[in-house]
Length: 325
Ligand code: ACO
Picture 1: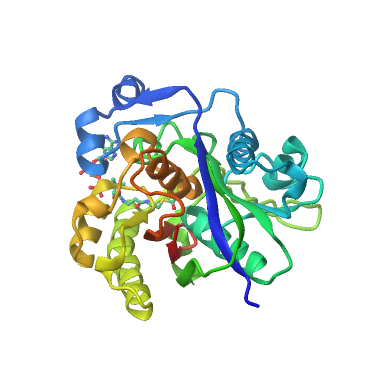
Picture 2: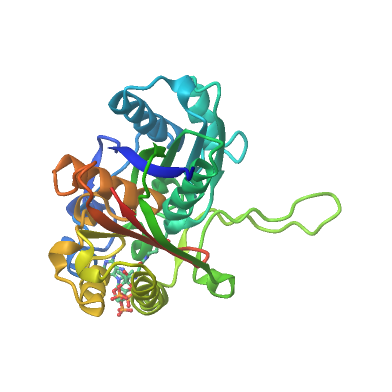
């Protein structure tokens, strides 16, 4: 008998502190007009005292409650993040301890804004192997700690938050198509958190904590390479673009979504957006959007809607999944 995985619950959580574009204009030479016209972003949630693992734990707790299951039923926890509390223990290990999931193995996955897609694909393979029955896949970020708040070209773009899904076994197929890519040769166009060599035997290299981005290059990458890969993934599946109820793309910039909709030949209504409320939350953006769509009844669990999820960002990385929900 074949083993299949399904997304059985969704959840999200964001810190309560909201920072508007006008708040930022008091700190730096920027304006609501510049930020919202170029990106669609109006505000973002910024953590005052909750770390990445705390945000992820709030999501994990909700997933257990909504699923009506106890923590010791969970077999694995994957947290996609580029802003872990520490390299060791991993954010996922902290979540495992916080919720008391004593039977779960847990690890972080680093693929920037594609992190949730790569993690969901990984989780699906664990379940479909037949070895594991339940897992949590979470994207969680506190990007506010890697943003250089003196750099107006990047600091206005990012926010903090977490979202995730409960994956469980199913008797029928839900994951239909996927593609995942990395181009390390273009990696320097989006960087953060470099740990330089440091030992008595090496030359001391600098640590560069802050996020740097060649905005234009990333924009072009998204509307060329990512749009093309989404098209190919749809063509290689048994679905046409009209069969897809919604396309949930990484929330970086509203203009990227406008261009994507045109390139893919779909109306903008099929591409929900929430960067207005959260900014770019990297690995958390797609699961936050998915959870909000479920909360707003746009996406209904267990009603056979087919959705496409696509992430793109640092690495460079990009990836797409087509899933029946
Ligand atoms: N407020 C006011 N002015 C600003 C600001 C700001 N916050 N930031 C930059 N400017 C100025 C610049 O200094 C420049 O001024 P100049 O012409 O006098 O030199 C002018 O605005 C235009 O700057 P550009 O960088 O050319 O602006 P652009 O139109 O390219 O928009 C943006 C920048 C919004 C970042 C865009 O390039 C973009 O969205 N790129 C994609 C980002 C993305 O998709 N990221 C996803 C991956 S992120 C991840 O993986 C973690």
